[in-house]
Image (tube, rainbow, N blue to C red; front, side, top):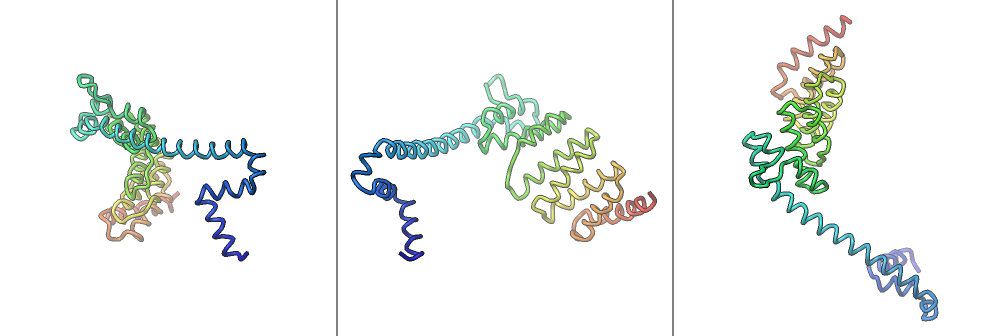
Length: 236
């Protein structure tokens, strides 16, 4: 048998459950001797397949429920009614963002609730809680994950923890670089390094804006701060 035919046959076996059974039994005698283990194997495969599709259905249903549950909370968030957004409305039994994030973790809506809740907590000055919620948010989105890293950096900056702030601003800078937001993150990174008295690292951040993003709205400030921090770094 050629290599090509062998590969084709292997594919046939993978795609056709009956082919698996034919291969296993080989003969009526083999099947009779091994009927019980074969039945267990096939039964186990069926259970796994049903469990997978059941889980997917459950996740889809949970995500739909979470979207409905968080509707009022997001509306309150948009109106800057932060306490109601976070805790819900007891008069209408509406869920708050914190409850949605906790009760529907693992769903897209529950994940997004972490973002909304984190921003609300940040606005309230509850920086540790904001960091916790924002760290629970995960996304492959072009912009949103970078923004969340930057917001975590803001929370650490407010806590005067400039080392961790710089770490998260760096994550924002390195996440799917783009002309609009990356220069802003670099500016925050440079300012944070300055506050931490690391003028060499600060000048490197500003230099990246000058060299890589010359058309950004941050370019004028970046040039000014670059000259300042290079001088301070040389003086140390």
